[in-house]
Image (cartoon, rainbow, N blue to C red; front, side, top):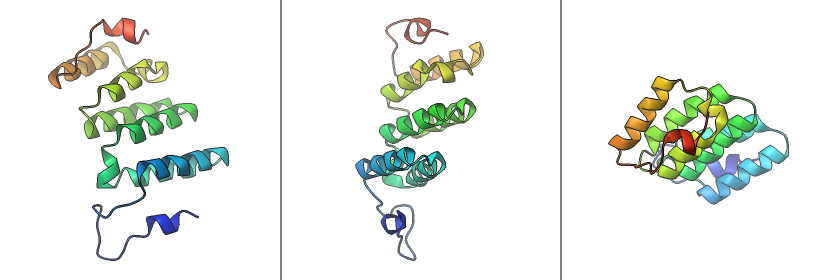
Length: 136
């Protein structure tokens, strides 16, 4: 049903515009309501291949939440690392991910220390201890 929105002319690449993020989120919501989480994930994955949506923190947050709600915390952890690689400037994305207990539970103390160190390297400051923001 969504193929007409994803039609890519021959010879074009990932720079060719696709649907805007608002339309993508509507597509995802529609698929989730239909009970087709796999299709919703496919819409998000395809959106993240596009240059104009790859750096959308909102799309990444939606994808993280969808993976968690679908009972796939390991997938959410992998998405977290992909997301912070694509949007290292988005403090809201980092904090949203760290506040999710499903992701935090999968990070051992060394990984958590590395994430906090990386946040500091990206000049994203925490005003409190990470344990207070996202308790284990």
